[in-house]
Picture 1: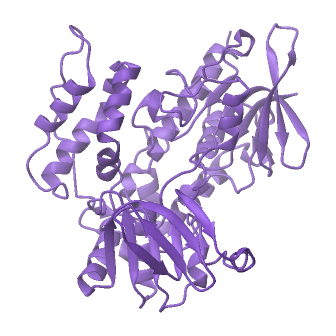
Picture 2 (picture 1 turned 120 degrees about the vertical axis):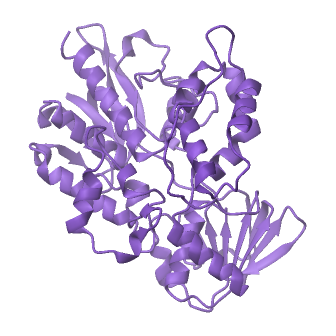
Picture 3 (picture 1 turned 90 degrees about the horizontal axis):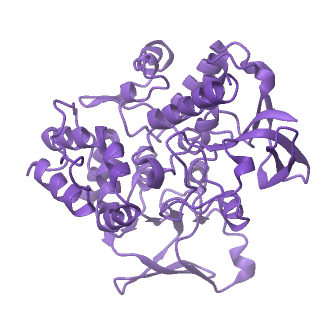
Length: 457
């Protein structure tokens, strides 16, 4: 029987391992199950040098009392002159993965942690133990099983899926077009198959498409580049922002905080300046500092109302571009090589000679390569747990519902405080928790909770 089993091998799993070892847990107590090298994940496991962090280096921290650690490490370990900008240093994503490996190498006991490099395909409730609690049973993709007393889900954002219907005109030809239809572009290996004169079409106008466009620009791409996005514009760039004060939040102690009241306060606090300006982002980041606290004060109904009203705008201003990336995008737009279309994709038609796109604005497009940057897909493991009544879905029906200790809500009392989740997908339960530092804080919270409430009882 394994003691603590971490499902996943990305960044969340990596910081969990670090925090457990630094909190005096024995490496023999920990098992990690995930197919990839520990610590990189989707966000930092990029293969292309052009994929950059969209936040400055001093924000990329693992422990709150060592916020300059990555920045100091970069001074001797990273050779990347293009990273430096007046707004800060924006290093390559894969360099942060190197930093994680550096952290592992300095942590005693790390090499003794057992890492099973397989995928978990199912989580099952085991039998009742002598202490009137059940153990967990997980099924791996090779058909074998593992047992554990405690499970921490650290699977991160699920891989992207096509956002619309697919029509195949020629099934046989379609099977040979894997390098033309890129469903998951996160690692960037698809760039090795692009011809310089290919026409490229990106679905989505967020950070993933910006990474791809910047990579094409860096490689001197000559063909036309098109983007289809619901807002019809790219995120603003990162400014050299700073938090100068704490916002005078509405007093929620005397009356219930509502979505309407919170939205009204947001609008009154943000200045009339351009969202790319330092002044506007200063105010935005001041609001973000305590937004998770305010979010938890809202009822489930008001959380859904606020999400419906501001979700696309929140993502647009929350996930800003690195200055280097948006500079390249603006140059391509100025040349007329890059066009962005305000629409959604209705259907993808894969024919023998071209990829045809049917858009909500009534237009049809043809392209050589289609890159799906529409966002995350569905986590099959999460869906299985909900379907089997092991766990409750969150208010958005996107992830699992957790409490403030990252304990997953379950009906079965015999499983109480044995299933946890650490993930950037927990916004419905916890608020603005997608940043690397926030994921690391989640991991630290879980480790401290297990240590205090389970091992020190």
